Image (cartoon, rainbow, N blue to C red; front, side, top):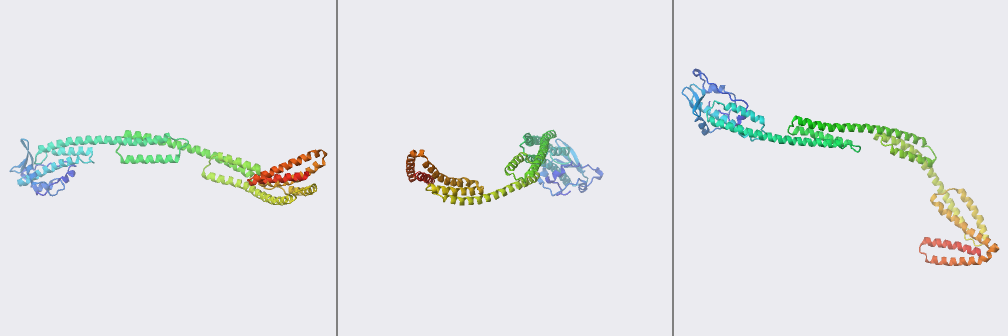
Length: 465
């Protein structure tokens, strides 16, 4: 075998998967050559040796090759045969077994490095140590076997420490995973405990769905939890979801029953509305429609689609009635406005009868006013807001005429002669007082009222004289 054919530490991980085959000593009369042995050796990827001459020499110091080609390794005070090559070059044979020693040591060195890796698993440590222990037990190599076995013992201790570390880390990771998954369960249980009449079922369903997605993601991405704990947590989570689903189903059933009842009530209201929609009893029917509207509001909801359709029918019946009532009102309003215009023309004629200065004029004014009042009554209603205004003006005309008439009666009554002078004096004094008030008045409305009062008393004074 040439000096360039040796495995390196890069090949050790592959080689550690199975124990190295111990080369069997061939019968002395027919011992194969090193080249023939190399052809029969286990197939392992080989590259140029990275071992230094110094390392090889140190390993070779623990072995020797006898004249008959037998290779020995020294272990303590004794020797052990590791191979035999007849007619082989002693230097090449010794180097081959020294290189195999360095290959085996490289596997131990690789495991020592691997123990520091973050992704190493406990089973990998156990398997690697088991294979190395088999290979280090009487290995067919030349080198410091005692040091190799001492290194293996150190690796066993380091492997145990690493496994303890991994176990502690896994325990902490499991505890954390249990805590995180328990938090998901508690959120689900809190949602289930909060269910009631004011629950937003759609929003709560979205929250349960999100919690379930979180649960699945946690299962995929976190450390595996022990089955009993995982099953217990899932049972709690599942129970919370079941509580929600049952409550939502019950709510949906009650909602459907309430909607059916509301639909039935609204259909009855629609029938009543359609029965009175053509009525012309505006006041009474308006009150009935208001009552129907109150009942509609108290009936509850029948579902969006049904409510829209039912409301359209009710609104159609109500519109039929109220549109007819409004049309009647519009017609009345137009007629009342025409009546108002006619009465305002009559007012002009009535007010033109004033002032009445004597009894003769009062009688003529009374006859004319009677005709005007007859026409007034025949005209009919005027807008409500104008009734007081125009009636007051017509009454004022009649009061002034009546004042003159009353004055005539007073003059023709012998009993009033004694009081006539006193009444004239009172009226004169009152007119003088009114003049002062009119002069002092600043409010236009108040001033106009005082002037109207003065005009009336002047009529009385003229009638008394």
